[in-house]
Image (cartoon, helix red, strand yellow):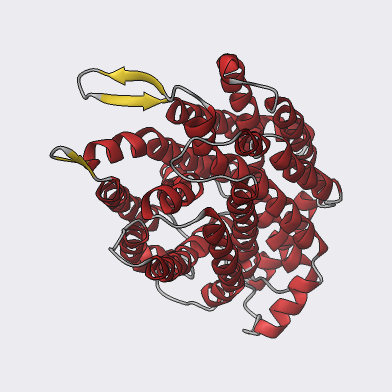
Length: 463
């Protein structure tokens, strides 16, 4: 079996470092940016998230099919990292820009730029994700590769969470006037430059090794029919959607929780830089660090218990811990941070398993049908991510409106109750839903090893 060099694992991780910086900007700050900086109502933003992301989710299989049919000297998937790195950063900056428009003009601008951002995100992220299925066929190396990916993903997220608010604070100071709009635009520009460099690093450090069967002819209709009959794919799709709803709700509500539920927002001050470090920054950075701990634990735990059992147990525990979180108040700060660590560690465990299992499903499909559609199958991972993010983001905006939230004012007790629910019981429903889906997943590690052995024999006969 192919053993990968450390440099290639690191190189593959670079891609999700870049992608996750913007993913975290979207999930943690974009709703807040639209409501508190750009001046769009929470209900309108919630609806926009639903409309644009459903459209974008439908683009994922299309991009997967396009990538499967791409043939260049660099392979099928790597070229998109080269072609789309700069557009990714440029459109990201436009998304966090605030032109002086009427209320309706702002809404139209938000729809256009956000839709463009999702199209560009799809164009680079689906080929990137699909690389996992063609770099190696070794199932242990795939889990290792996915672990490196998510260590770098959460490292990118930590960078954003640690620096976003401080950088916005610094760049917002325009003489004696504070301009948060400029602060956000400059901050995202810096992250965009970093993302471009890391995407290019993935392009140069990785290699595609697994090819479709030589006798396979391009036939999208057949690929879609095969996918429609792939039960493990549907089950994993459901588990992924529920897990992302869980994460999206907790992420999207966090900044509101500390801004409007806590009386004191500032944890401490950096005296030399004159920058306040808020509780929300510490909370979010701790969550990403705990995610990394979970990613590291995923491989040794799943090696003993299997991917399915590990996934199931992590989601059940995340559900229980989230429910307990509801009862904490501002004077329970230590418990708030302890349970943030526990919940985030559980969430971190499932992500390398989820992506490794998509690679297993690509093998299962080839074993069963004699055809390989890596990009199409991995597009489902992005689709589940976006569908979960879509529903979680839309629910966050709608529930803020439902509970009577109004930006930049003292919140009612009902609004504060709603924000607490959005960090506890409501996301817990997503966690237990993910556990229920994965309970019915049938591709255990032993079966996948058998499939992998037979596929290796087939490929050797073809050559």
